Image 1 (tube, rainbow, N blue to C red):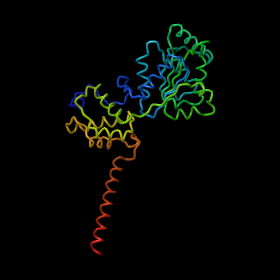
Image 2 (image 1 turned 90 degrees about the horizontal axis):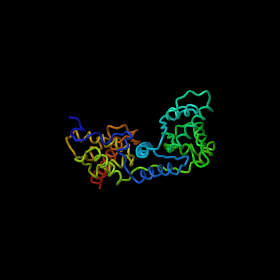
Image 3 (image 1 turned 135 degrees about the vertical axis):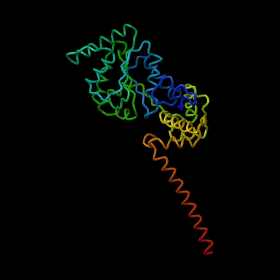
Image 4 (image 1 turned 90 degrees about the vertical axis):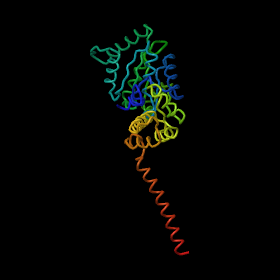
Length: 304
């Protein structure tokens, strides 16, 4: 029997893939979802969604596309470290425009014709770039050029840049000031607070049919302290903690299960110093203090 069968789970509740059905509506994530809807409905040209690794940016995007995709045609670029020409070719390919073009000018004309056709059909076309902090400066400038494609009343294509905080710094470079001026909608995803961390864990357990599993408050506090509310790190720690409890034939996840979980994870992943090493240093420190007190007591009794 594997641990999923033991707990009666239909799947791993803490898998780290960006599955839209596991979207957790924290305030920050709800705000991001509303922003995307506003940008599309208002026809804004550019939108930037920022967040540290693991905060759920890709999940927000995939949920948005799943819920609003009926009249959306989009190119989702997942490997953005491309030259301007390579980027344009990938966009055209993602949109199903796979004709061979003799020149870039010809490709842009075909792209504009495609956009105008989709507009007449009542569709909106998006270019979504994940990990956009990896876009070269020249390619970001290319995006500005593509955003110039418009009619007298609205943009023909809307662009959503999704990336880590480094993207915000890159956009502030003097060479990109024209692009920055066009970005009127931008927000950053925030980590979960303690209450949302608790709700997040229970939310994922419920979706995976793990209603017989209990994370104690002390174990959740420990997860929150170590993960700092980062959803991906919460998932990694919680998944390993489930495995620890399974080895004990327990349906209750206790603080020591979190310790076991953390001890199996590369400290670099958790962005921590070695957790066991910290614990060891604390113990050594306590022992040193006890020894100093005992030594002081012995000296006092011997000489006074």
